Length: 294
Image (cartoon, rainbow, N blue to C red; front, side, top):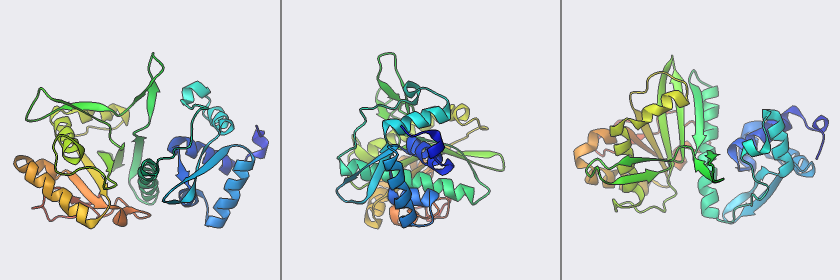
């Protein structure tokens, strides 16, 4: 393992960031830390030589993807002044081979990067960002995902719907907090069946809102009162965008007012852009307003 003297401050920032994001591709690391792809590649080769990070590739992702090595995890644990066990990092971590999973994972990370940088350039504070994989170890040794929850269906209170958002985050402007749940849609979920996929997810969020369970995030993000939340869905194409709005409005025709808090956009509008800006429309097809998170 290299000594701390051989690791620059920026190296330390990069390995801690890799711990927080788990997997990042070259362009994402560049976006966070470097002025050019050439500089990013050169420095990442150095971190590989220092045995702090590893890399892999998957089909249909035309870039290297980086993650922590065991040495890198030890450096992060030292930086955070915790043990490897508390870090919840496993030396048995393997590079995923499922490129659908990696595309989804990297898209979530891209949204997180863009929100973080947009807040840095504005008067809006990012109070926190919790990805779906964040969790804690149970007494049995398993990892329980922190943001996994359940809700009762609004039309059938005997039906419990379990769900894990892709991420939860909170913003604050002029001491007024706002809560957001993020769902990344890669175009693989069925849209018209209320028992699975897209409509089942919406049933969960409607029940979750009715029960007021989102208020627990006031303590999580140490913020003021949360009166409601916004659901953000980023989808793969304008055609799917239209289909999602139509299916949601048709199925939840008696609750279209609630659908106005569920916002939708496409990857083309947000990737490497400013997701805080006016990119969003509600799932209610009768609502022509354009929304922003600002």
